[in-house]
Length: 94
Image (cartoon, rainbow, N blue to C red; front, side):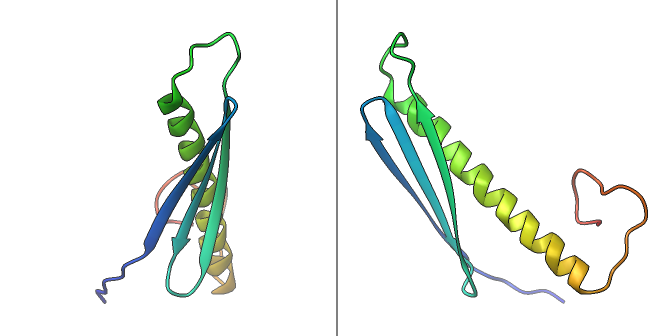
């Protein structure tokens, strides 16, 4: 059972006054999910916009990743699959 899919992803960054906000959007062809992230520069820190971009983008992508894992877990539970004991931290096994 092999298949190939293409999901479209976009990352938007907005910076104003020491705060960077990021929005990560993935379109699976079935649903569109949006993750959000923010980074704030301490006024005592040097102004290096790339750091704010990286932090905000990383946080938005983490938010998006959590949403995808939550959806996958609900889908697995919807199949009636039972899993004994605690969930594994990584992998497909649930």
